[in-house]
Length: 479
Image (cartoon, rainbow, N blue to C red; front, top):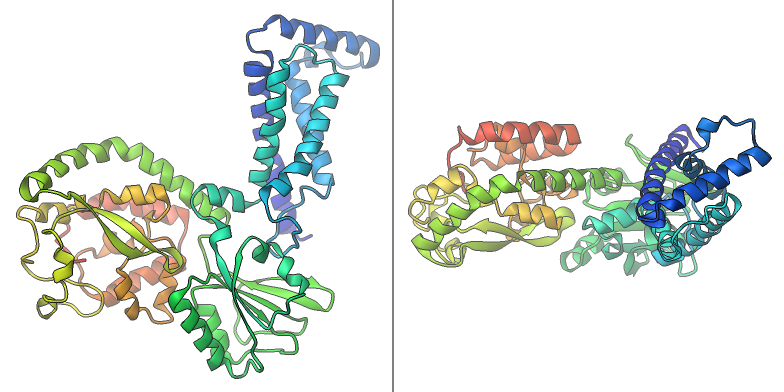
């Protein structure tokens, strides 16, 4: 085990110790004892009696219920980590269990046996039996959630079981089909390639299938191949998908980049994950998005209510509209907006194409006839974007990220710009705080790529802080 994995083990252990100890003490006081205050006296008397009989060398001030509960949790976690039921989850490790229930049961048995043994040995007799049964379920649930990021990601809106993968030259009986990365996802197509030197056929197969189907992971069995053609390697590094290679130990790359690998005898797995908002990073970003949205929701409602009345009186219903946009990994979602244009105005876009001032996916007309009278104010200060915080809560968008484009604009995505699909689209971003008035798609491209290559939570926070200042010097921009 390398130093990074050891640090993860330690950090997870300390985190679990703190969380489970706090939950156990709180649950004990609130439910296991509850209103039966005489129960504390019974348990303390039992503990002092045992001290006199078995461990009188321990000072009396250490004989406290919370101390015993904390020590119990520590010993339980030591036992749990020593077992095979709670090892560090690695996506490249094998998993015989696909459902969370299969993971829950062995952890539940260890926890229940440990808890009941502790209560019996130290004579914690004055506890509620009904709430004790419930408590035997609570902690294992927490442990399953914290064991891997898959459960938390699912809860926050990104379910790995809905992700799909394509296989190339992977045998039906291959043991590598049992690794966690594939076990929890869906096999949507299997392919056989005679020679990877004919990589154009592979690329064409991927492109054709991806036009009609969502593909998140590409899996290649490249045993017998020591290297890809440079052009094919470049394609795989830039495509908007995770790459898994099953290869011989001597497989190498022409360029240097970060990837994970795991050795299995004379074979190894190489995992290339271009998804920078993944696992713990995705979880932290989603949590920060949700917290921020909840905190500013009162202010948003104060602005949203009069805006709703204005549009309703000016142009009737609907006040809120939904537009199909391209989200993370190319998923199509419905983005919410306050309607600032006349009903069905987007359908007139083709008819007004000759008046479009721009090239590329940006669509802007000076003095656009589709705009509701007085609605320029909404667009100038992005008031029409406020409903998109609902998309943030749903998990379709983030507070910060590249602006989501229309599905028909995907024709402008080259193999470089498609990388924007590796991050969640956002309400604000680098473009909005630097050059929000631009109608030049090349500038959009520049800021989107810069954001992707330098993404961090701290950077998101800085963009959020700068956004209000950029609003007051903005002009209207199309899209």
